[in-house]
Image 1 (cartoon, rainbow, N blue to C red):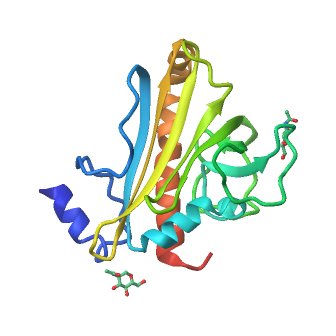
Image 2: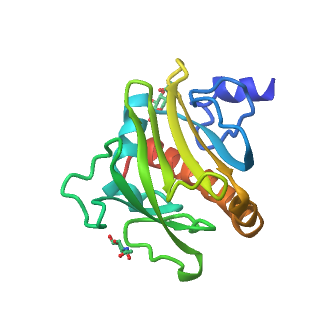
Length: 205
Ligand SMILES: *[C@@H]1O[C@H](CO)[C@@H](O)[C@H](O)[C@H]1NC(C)=O
Ligand SMILES: *[C@@H]1O[C@H](CO)[C@@H](O)[C@H](O)[C@H]1NC(C)=O
């Protein structure tokens, strides 16, 4: 009941973050065999189009995202491509903060060097009509380490959208990641959801 009420009143209580456990989801089915999963759900007073646009606007991430500080579409040789829009099959370089930076962040907020992690990903889904975006850790190594991060936005029909993200970590090396960074990765996903909510509801960035 509390969860349902939160969604229905999201626009009134829009300064709160609602992490719901409701079953309704716009994410595809989770893969099996994961060692652990990191996920988040946040209700935002915005439109699905605006939320999706914010997710695919990689050059603007640093202005609002305390977790992913840089997402750069690159060539296979790690050169920054002139067109930074995500395209399925393209390579993506990420510079993230685990744990995330404290709020507030802007494009000039420096990294915490102790929290900085780099990763190389392959963009696997750019689905504007479904409101979905995904990328997959490289090298994708079955049995050792596999991880695909999905993000999705969906219209709740009451002036609000649901932002969701989920990453299932698969393979022997995922156990190590869980022990060393699992809790802080969860904080990162939650912080990105809150940052997106602040960006879209405040509108000043
Ligand atoms: C790839 O490029 C980024 C900057 O766009 C740089 O920070 C990173 O070190 C590069 N990686 C390699 C392996 O050269
Ligand atoms: C969302 O926020 C705007 C102000 O930014 C407000 O006018 C509106 O009533 C809120 N609720 C909905 C359902 O849009």
